[in-house]
Length: 63
Image 1 (cartoon, rainbow, N blue to C red):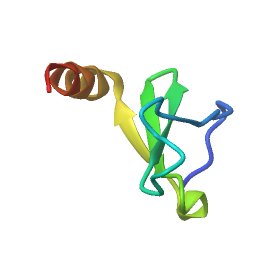
Image 2: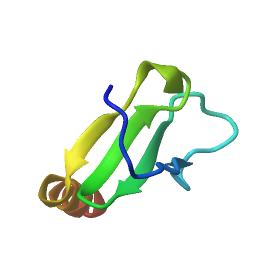
Image 3: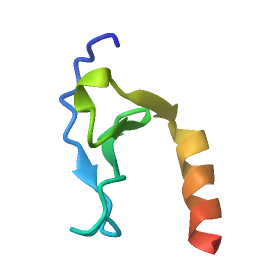
Image 4: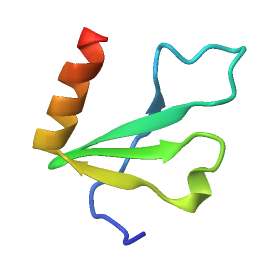
């Protein structure tokens, strides 16, 4: 994964509890968000453009 000049500060969802190991982490980027597997952060991250991230959050909020 290419390096970015923006320092990424990943955080887990508030829905991630101590009893689950299957979590993703998200970092805010100037152009959207970055998502990675919390159990394997060294495998890299997926960058999601702002418009697509906003659309995903809208759909998830309705679920």
